[in-house]
Length: 116
Image (cartoon, rainbow, N blue to C red):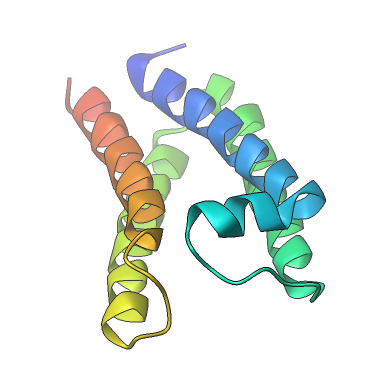
């Protein structure tokens, strides 16, 4: 795999872990973010979606599809922007920005790997 492929591949495993955590133990992650516990199904639905996206990353990475890698850069960068908006609107705690920063770090990693 290329360096860009590896960055997407490993980020995919991060997404799989977050997805499983949101699905099986959502309140553990919410507590880490200082967000109130929930019994609503939506956090688990989000976990399923995140897990699914993680599968895309893990299975697409070995194909070395640079169009896919480029798309992940735009999407992961936008996550931080969305989380900043959510924080500024008072909808989310500042701790959510840590997950946005993880997405941005992954995007920067892929971007720099693609530029080599």
